[in-house]
Image (cartoon, rainbow, N blue to C red; front, side, top):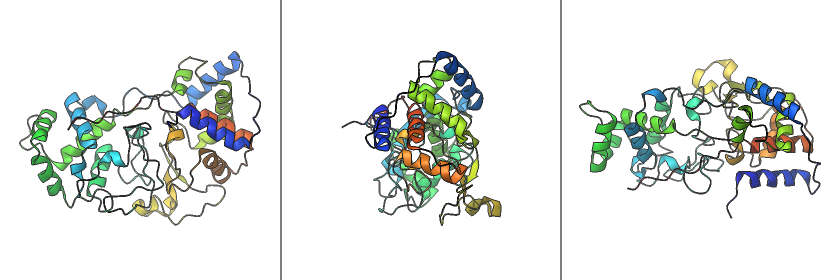
Length: 339
C-alpha cells in the first residue's frame, strides 16, 4: 500500500499516543500571522534555485539526469546513483530508507545515505563535510570500492566513450571541448541535475502568506519547535544542513564514529556531524549518521534530550512530528530516461 507523507505522520502520532488522542489545538489567525512572520525570519523560504544553477544548461541537466540512472557507472554494471538516492517510484525521497546502503559487492558503508534533494543548498556534502561542492561529491561514490566500485577515472571514461548515445550528449553539454567525455564532466553534469532537485512543501506556502497551509496541529507543532530551541541547529531555509554540531551536545551520545574529525583532524571537530536538513525528513528515515533510529518520533525525542537537555512529553513530540509532516516534499518522482 502506498504510504503518503500525511498518512505516515498520522501513523507516528497514533503510535505516540498509544491509543490516546490528544485534543486538537486551535490556533487563531492573529497567532498564525505572527508565527508565519517569525518562521520566515528564522528559516526563510527555500530559494527557487541552488547556488551554481545559473551556469547550468538544459543539455547539461539532461545529461546529468541520464547519468544519475546509469548502471554502467558501477564496476558490475548493476548499480546507479538512484539505487541509494531514489528519485523514482512511490517514495522518491532522494534516499533509500535503509540504515546503511549496500554497494555493488553487497558490502555496506558505515553511514546512512542522506537525501540528494536540496543538497546543493547545503554547507558541504557528506555527513563529515569532506566534499565542499556537488561536483566534488558526485565522483566520490563512483570510485568508492564499497559503493559503485569503478577502478579508476579512466575506466569510467572508457565505459562512457564506448556508448554511442553519450558522445553526442557530452558534446552538447560541454561544447568546444576537445574531449568532453571525462569523469570531471560526468560529475559536473550530475551536479547540474542535482541542482534541480528542490523540495516543495507547505511550510513555504505558510511563510508566503497562506495561513491555512498548515493544520492547527502542525501550526502548534511549529510554535513548539521554535519555543523548544530546535532552531539552534535547524535553521536557515533548509532547516539544517548549514553547520556542524557535536552529537551529544548536552547529554552524551555514544558513537565510535569520529565525524568531521576524520577530515580536519581538529580536536574540536571530534564527533561533530553536518546537521541534517529537516525538509522532507518525514520520508527519509532511518535517522542519524548511522541510521540507528527508525521512527521520527524517537528521533525527535533523542534530539531534544541529547542536544537540548529537554525531556519532551508524548504530546509535545506528536506536535513536532506533525509540523515535520508539513515539510513533506510534494514535487513527485523523476521519470528515468528511456535507455
